[in-house]
Amino acid sequence: MLKILKYSFYDLMRSRWSYVYFAFYLLLGIVLLFLNNDLSKAVITLMNVIIVLVPLIGTIFGVMYYYNSKEFTELLLAQPLKRSSIFLGQYFGVAISLSMSLILGLGIPFIFYGLFESSAIWDFSLLLITGTFLTFIFTALAFNIALSNENKIKGFGYAILLWLFLAIIYDGIFLMTLILFEDYPLDKLSLIGTMLNPIDLSRTLILLKLDISALLGYTGAVFKQFFGTNFGFVVSIGMLAIWVIMPVLRIVFKSKRKDF
Amino acid sequence: MVSIQNLHKKFGKNQVLSGLDLEISEGGIFAVLGPNGSGKTTLIKCLLGMVIPNKGQISVLGENVKNGSDYRHKIDYLPQIANFPSNLKVKELIKMIKDLRENTTLDQDLINLFKLEPFLDKKLGNLSGGTKQKVNLVLTFMFDSPLVILDEPTSGLDPISLLRLKKLIQAQKMSGKTILITSHIMSFVEEISDEIVFLLEGKIYFKGSIDELKNKTKQPDFEHAIASILTDNHA
Image (cartoon, rainbow over all chains, first blue to last red; front, side, top):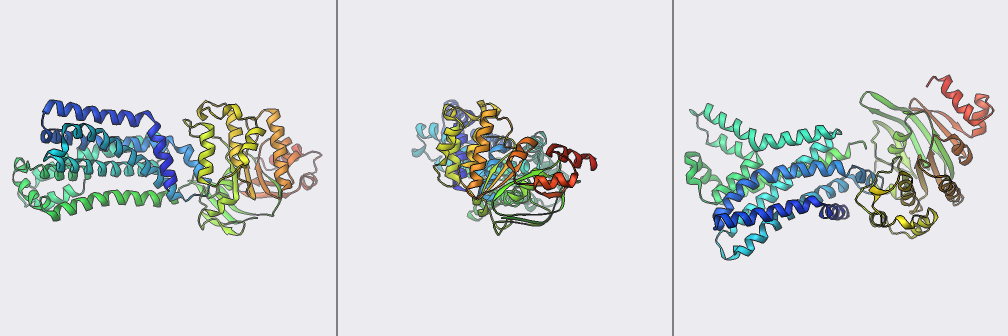
């Protein structure tokens, strides 16, 4: 698997898009720091961008890479290699190179701005950790969609729909239910609802660490009680890990049964 | 060498292989023939584990295909359509496949044989179809495995390369290898193969030498013998 990972990673490192992605984050980091002139404020703005953009890029890159490397995959399938190592190698190659672009692109300007002397370092690290989780989650989901759809256009369509659903529509439905059932105690339901969507989960996790939960009102207090504690933190990270593991297992399962 | 029992494969509603049995003994050149869509490529892909059969047993050199991927160390496979990652150089591709599989020094001889020297630093996406097929041949033959599977090896080759390929295949046969070939070029098949396996509607319709086929169909030459099978079965 490591050899495939190495080749997928090099392949992506040579492609223009990794650099565009890296340069984008570099620029974003510099601009935000320049405009805000304050590390913690820049972290909050950055969160809003990352929470939406990272899943989108992960999804699109994942689907695109799978379909583009179809020929390479077929070449590998005839070699004495396990199917699981071919697909996991490719998946980790994509996910790691995207995460690297994210971490380096944002990390470099923040380090130069004096991150290590600032109190925002933990918030910033949490931002990068959730960003990396989101990259791994959405790349894995994208690979799942691509493996199940021979048709490129369909695959792209489903991938975009998935992103749209989790990033935007889910929140809408969630809010509607909260309004509809406002007469009932909703703290548990909203906690579970947040857990089930990795984007919401990451957002809540960061917001509460940034200590602006006062803005969230009553639900904020309930959330703070849960996510603010160590237990809540561990559970949320565990939940994000499950969001990575489940689709990865399905990649292994699905690839074993597919005809090429 | 290769033993296939009761092989079934369906793609959606399309039954491609229906209860195919085939025994291939060690050594010699076997041509797998059949009309378009008769399941030649599917059969080969089943052997390689790329297509997973619905039913049936396949074993290659005594190893069941379902148990792992190690048996593919003993197979060299030439795919029908040479699709390579287009942003890779020829040299890099050869190096990569060697790294993934095992080291070999045969590639240099093959590069010389097919005169690929000037293309080594070119990207695969910029090569012509025939040159890609030559790269494909180098990748296939450089490992010296006991079973060689060639899916349409002649496609896109110029006459001189075709001659070199024929010589190469004969040399491989002399060293005791088993070679499976599919092709639609009847003259090529007639010249090179020891035995014919004719697929029709997902089953083996005929297996034997070319002379046996001529006798069976009562036709004077090979091409007409094949044509008569096809017209008799209105395929």
